[in-house]
Image (tube, rainbow, N blue to C red; front, side, top):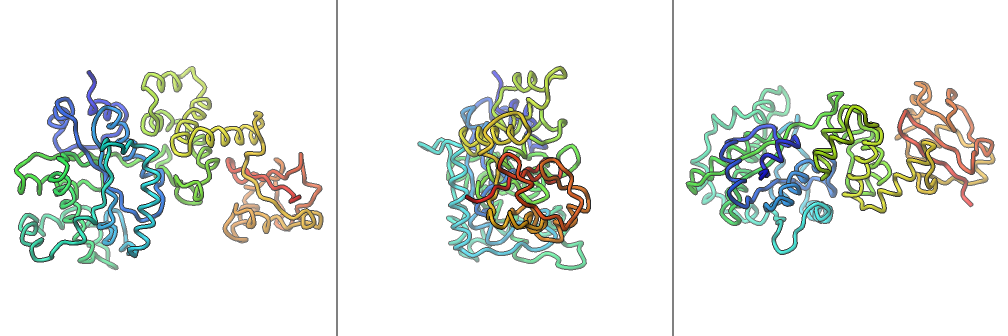
Length: 411
């Protein structure tokens, strides 16, 4: 019978592990409790967070128990890993608001009923620590010399400006203390996280071995880059959020629909629950890769926003690309009919629709040949958009190759 460890390898979830043979045996012999930490620095998860959450969802489907640690305590310090400067410190109110948003979204992936999965906040054990007793219990087990060799610290120390604050220097100890507490409270034996967390995660296993005389393990995930070498989940306009107010279901759907051909197999393995045999069939050499992209977009959007929203997004995309569908579901803005009759400057229209952040960005878009109205290229920044541009009751704006937007007169 296939173990969860084999499944994680087959689906491309593993970058490195502390003790692969012991981890594989553990998954074969017992129900494993594993955890992932998410610092609540925003009120929504984004596509990057989905990666470790999907790992936990796959593990739960195979009978294991996930713990999500929403780091209300560690977020008050800030993780220096991969950061060139100190992260903005959030207030208690901001953290509470962010945690509430994250809790709601996690329910789309994990079953929290009857303890099948747990969500805990490390503020529960970190915020009431007594400083001197904590130092006496934990401090002797950390070597400063060894800590300074960790990539997350060394990179910051080598920067001529900024450097590393004492506040951030504590992050590794706090993360290790999280693992120790989860081990003591819930029997958690495995931490899963990004590969940039390797040093912090190993510190936790070492602390558990020293204080509890028990084995504990870590498993890191690969950095998720697309075929062009860019970080997945990022667009020109920023992160791809799971909150519909931050990234609309349509834009979310289109993000997956427009991934590079070379990335489809890997993304299907990571971001869907489709069986590997089905993924192989959909992406075979003789298959239509665009159909596979549609399946990918539908699966991920359904998971995050529900099947109804995914179908609406697919229908809007079909209408935009001339393949039928319900055009009423495409992203649209409404303008005054009288203003349209008089004429609206194309740059001002782009700004009002939210397609560009500023007039200067709009001018650059036109000057670089990246704007079309009703599939006609726009090369004049002084163009007036009028009722003469209406086609089937709307003006279709195409920004770049993949962003479409309808402008309709207000009744």
